[in-house]
Length: 150
Ligand code: FES
Ligand code: FES
Image (cartoon, rainbow, N blue to C red):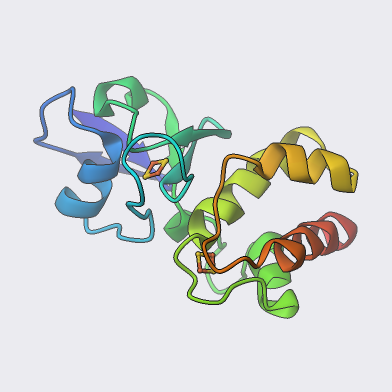
């Protein structure tokens, strides 16, 4: 199966029903996409398929065929961080960082459709992504900063 990930084409050997999460992590060593619950409840595994946020733990690899897959490794442009990555850094929007890739990709999907979201819209959009360290206020501040500065 051919998958288009972060602008590069990969040939993968996994069975079509294998979760995209395991293809990314185990076959391609793209370990920025995290395993949290494996049940669509935490958002740690969030990736973008054609710009839409999806849980990689619940997405069969075959469903991602023909779509542009973006993981956290593909968000920066060379040395230039994505505005959300920059804003998360500036706001110190993490503690352990485990939720951060999924948070940033979920926020990227939000800003793609709603470039200047209200605080309520941010909270609603990010609702399915869990941060066990409780850095939610800083995450919201980082998304607001990225929206301002993008
Ligand atoms: S690991 Fe996919 S939602 Fe938790
Ligand atoms: S920073 Fe630790 S889970 Fe979010």
